[in-house]
Image 1 (cartoon, one colour):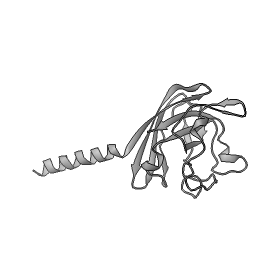
Image 2 (cartoon, rainbow, N blue to C red; image 1 turned 90 degrees about the horizontal axis):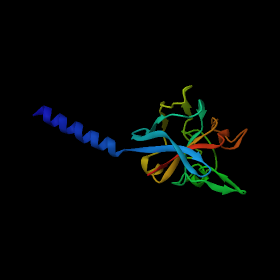
Image 3 (cartoon, helix red, strand yellow; image 1 turned 30 degrees about the vertical axis):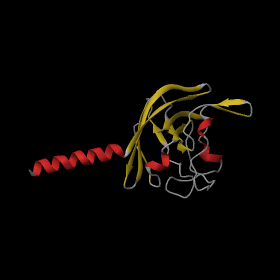
Image 4 (cartoon, one colour; image 1 turned 180 degrees about the vertical axis):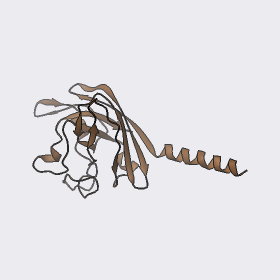
Length: 172
């Protein structure tokens, strides 16, 4: 009887855990829309914020800016007569209007995440943690990978110097 209760508890915990996570398909951001698939980022709610588990391939090696953007779109949009990949995702998620790029644990944009590490072979599997976010915060938004790294400051370049939007996924 104890075994059956323990098994039922495990099943309930497993069901609760799966309800507290989202898998987000990520594609290359291109001027005409979404390009080739690069993998998935699994977002898991923990008692300490959100954990992001990437399973990505085909990216350039190094550190990349990694953010939650305000709109649930990865489509291109026009800016000053030029089509920009994934511009329809809007800016970094900033519900309090801080207008300040900062650390994931600080008081800047709520969508600022730790940088994404991509290995020499183009794969990314190292998780990152965002202590201020919960699943309801990220639903109906997008997740963005930028070309360059992120220094979590607006100096010397705005938005941490992350650069172009190279891959994006819509968070349902």
